[in-house]
Length: 389
Length: 176
Image 1 (cartoon, helix red, strand yellow):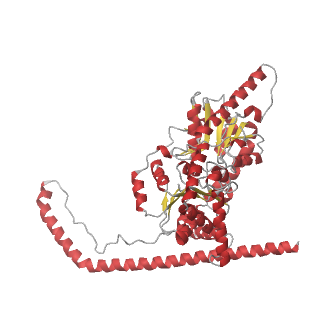
Image 2 (image 1 turned 180 degrees about the vertical axis):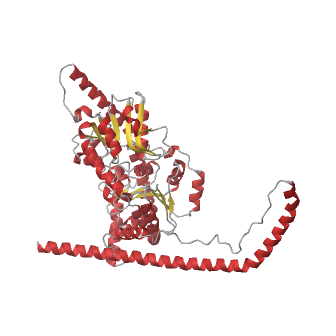
């Protein structure tokens, strides 16, 4: 009964995972498909190609569109074939970070905002997964935006048996504390900040400290620059890992002593939530939606460019057992608040409620009572009751 | 559903086993404590003041150097360079009456020639490998020096540009 559309579907991608979880729930109500323009290996069979969108079987229902990036083919498909949409806005990365490394991506990101503006009249329900993202949608002209937290499967890594080979490898890295950073190698993630901070941590506080960085390589120039940066800041023996399995990631979360992300822009920051769920203290930049996600369960640094400050904070977390205890306790609690068990039912109710409302309107209109309005619905019509968090 | 559904970041989550009293929060205070310590150390001269935007300048210099192909290559590794050339002994193809008859003789001859050749080239091969290793070490040192000098130069230039931009802004503010 319900179909979804992504710009790109990839294994391990948080938005793809969220769409799959939503599909599983919607499938309980009837047939549910996911379409995507880009389908990475491993997603075949789970996701259908974009060119099949015009013949989707659930055309009577609005299409659930996950917006995370601009795409001209996706925009054309929506413009030509989809008069009714449920928009789930996951945030667009700031284009300025991509001008140097991938101008075409910067162009997609700029155009993406324009495309969302063009689709405004078709959107029956606009969902943002954070207040931060809701503000961005409002800036694009969306008057009524419903905030439904993302649906991270926070216990995903707790259900996986840690990879024995990775556990053995980590033991071989030495006895010092392990700082873990998990982020795609994208310029706005500012991974160089983490490298500089851990280098200072090694040089000024804990020579035995080690860094494990997990992140898929997206832009060759940026990735090469990161590796050179690791050398030039004097980072000793960094473990730079690309795409790894959930079992390997689980081993890293299990053995790490602190999780660090100093990203400049995040719509939510799933890795920080996964870290909290696995009982790992979080040190993060106070940027974009990260403070709202981490709340008071992590240490937020408002000047992440100051590597000396971040190194001092990491040192404090690694050497103050009371602080660690508090952070771990709050982190686990915070992750539970943000888990899909809480937010997924909200999302399902929001999406399904749209159809119920619009079908009721159609019935009313058909009965000759007259339409109740056009365009975006009002808050009182669309928002399901709030779940206490 | 509204934005207020997300928990209030200012509200405490979970209990605080530190026993900190109301108005104090161990987590919120931790960063401030580190910041105060750093400010004190910087005031004492124990820590240098980092120029604003230093990390950005450094990374920008790295990106430029990578784009120019100056620092991308990893250091040359000569670990797998053998002192003695390893030549595999030639073996005649198996099968057929002729091959079965000639195989032992030819194989013996091949091993004999191989041993002689190895003996003759051993000194030459060892010296060549030694020289290549020395050259690689020199090349790595030069490459590292040039890369660092290049990065420092770009960084200092960018710092100078930032200084000049600040001065221009100050002058413009003063002119208003």
